[in-house]
Length: 173
Image (tube, rainbow, N blue to C red; front, top):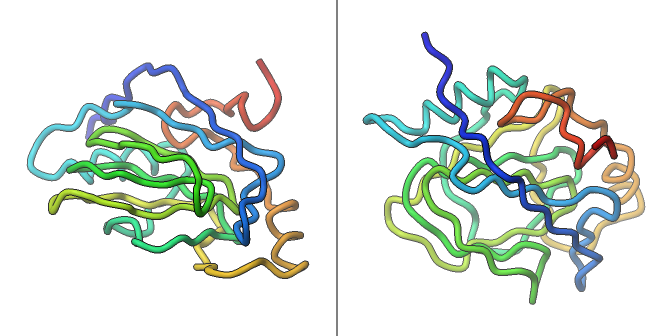
């Protein structure tokens, strides 16, 4: 099987401070890969799954993004937009509104708030996490233990889209 084509894209970064009850991540930026995957065929979600698997991020689900603010403390999350479009808010209430469309990928470090404000009926996302990490759904202010988990959660070995260790999370340029 051929590896799906991951486009060479300029990665965009967003940093968030704590926003009301949403902790966000004080050390790691959100990474945005516009049109990272060339969406094609009758199962575009499989292209994202293959790319994520090839880069050490086992896919866990196909769904959308919840329409309520939440974050995760036990996993960094990659979201591959397989079809449709959505308006997401990142960083918690009154956060950054982002338009996403098929082919885009978002990498959310643990603690990053996210919520679906509006989406097309065909909006489909592939979600993946580094091995041993998972998506706990947190909808209220974090405990000290949850903040410690966000701070100490290990870096993934590889970028889920481009494969190499990404300099945005390791400080390497």
